[in-house]
Length: 256
Length: 363
Image (cartoon, rainbow over all chains, first blue to last red; front, top):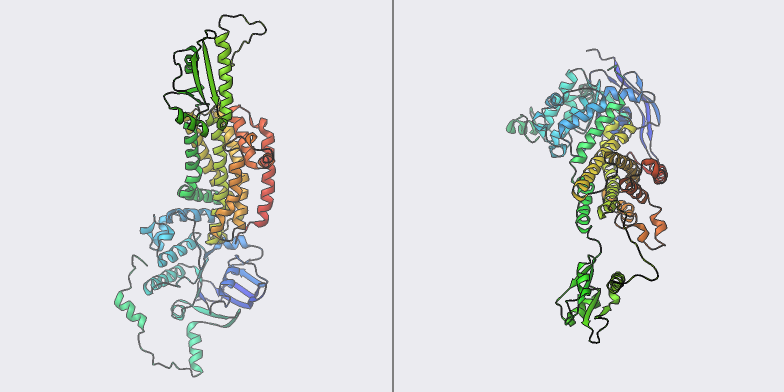
């Protein structure tokens, strides 16, 4: 696969707040049609970095280019070609999912069929439900559906699987992989390393506002192993989550 | 994706979403429709009776005489018969009865009857009405067959539009409905949209900030106008609310409503920016709405207030909206005739939006 075409390019990104520096000199590229993971502990600057690329936050210095557009000059253009899922976004109160979809199609200025969008995330049965009445997994799936309305080139997902049960998580992985397979670049943040390992083509580790490692999960693991690292416990062919999924099934559930 | 982005479409999508949301919000419906309607119902049924003066007839009083006969025909006087002396005395002290009358045949011959009236200090204004009714009666009874020697009064009444209680109450209630939906509605919506990161999600789309404000404004104005039409229609058909020029008057009232609502929404924007939490919105909003509710001539004419209070009343925007509404509805004034009131509202609007721009928060 051709991996040299950078769709997002971040150079020396710095974000200072009044009393501390959240991002200090980040540089990385996201290639077209990959799933790129930003990993790191809370407060490392992942969300800040994402929001600067999403044009929701102003940077202090540095350069951010998204599909050829600069966040300084073409924020409006960038917004039209990206889909954004925020960590804790709410939706307009008192509206059902179809009505929310209509609202977002108006906001993006595109015409879509709300039911088709909901089918993409398997929420067609919840068309008349209110967002508040959805379960955690359904909420995340709905959020992702709203990011797909404008057929974006890049989708940003900020901790989409936090707080979900194993089935919901795996369903979401399938969904994210499908989005990528349809030609969309995905940038994702997560705390779960198994998730990053499974899902991401490349990951960047962020720590105190800087990138401390960036490579494919495989290469990063190989590098560590080559230094002589060994797990204390012998690795078995399955882990406890495999047992859980094996026992409880992998199918979509009404409540996840 | 080369199609240019359409701001109007985004604004209208927001207006539609907001309108749907308002229609499903119980508090919006209650404040805009139910409250004003309840007040209109109460005052609609209360009003129209005019003044009634209760006059007790003393036990032992003569009943078959021209004085009592004339009093019975008078539609201001309500005669209270068959009460004991002690009871009458008690009611007089409380002011429930304005006076007691005792008519006796004059044994001396002329005049034929003597009427003793005892007033009460507990009901002076009604007592005064009674006094003038009685003195009128005294003259007409005594002057029956006489030519006046000094002056003759020729009285006639011009038939004008009947000014009912509803004509006063309805514009006031309409104004108050606009005030509460403008202040409470706007404050709550923008605060919760900000708090729940709904606006942040909007910002991730190409929508402009102005579209968010306009969309919300269009929805709220649409909803308030629907409420206004509903109140006017109920008032007109059930309580004979006067609309001098019919539909033209209604349109003028709706235009005034829009001006008033835009000003009141400015207060809402300020409240949403100032409020630190959801629970501080109602007290702050009440500080703005309650004084206007009480002092802007919603229930009583501000002329009835003590003089030191009147300048405060005359400083409030709702006073001018109410004033303009009444002039338009009852006197048939056009919008140009109430330009002074509109000017004051516009000045309020400029002032409040200047503050709103400073304190309003998007995030």
